[in-house]
Length: 142
Image (tube, rainbow, N blue to C red; front, side, top):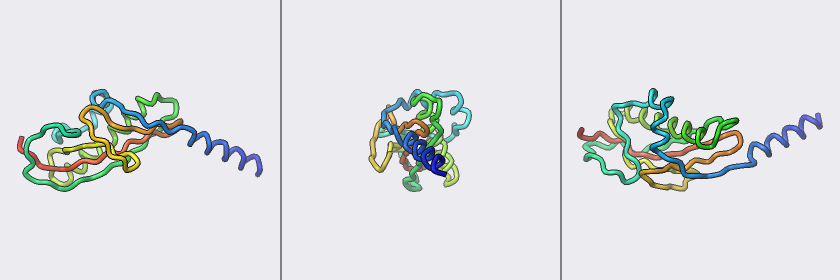
């Protein structure tokens, strides 16, 4: 029993040993072929303060918080996958509400907002990587 408790203690400290928060390229993440096939082409994405057509209806701001297995993956690969999962969740929310775009998408990791049209924030650890995003679901004129 003592050995099991010691092993669990060591494992939990290793799992929490690293949590590096970094900036990663939105363009690189969106260009991954394994994510493109799951994204919705009919829901436009606008990051940070990117210009977009005028919104004719707003459905509100929504948040995502996606985590992925980072074991045996580079931080970049794990973070891009978590980012794509978060984007897909925002697009799914937009589609369910009748929106056709998500605007003002920004990072919101650990409630620390960061707005960029080029990068997103990701926390990468030894076992888990996570991305949190916020965006406003709207209907725009196309």
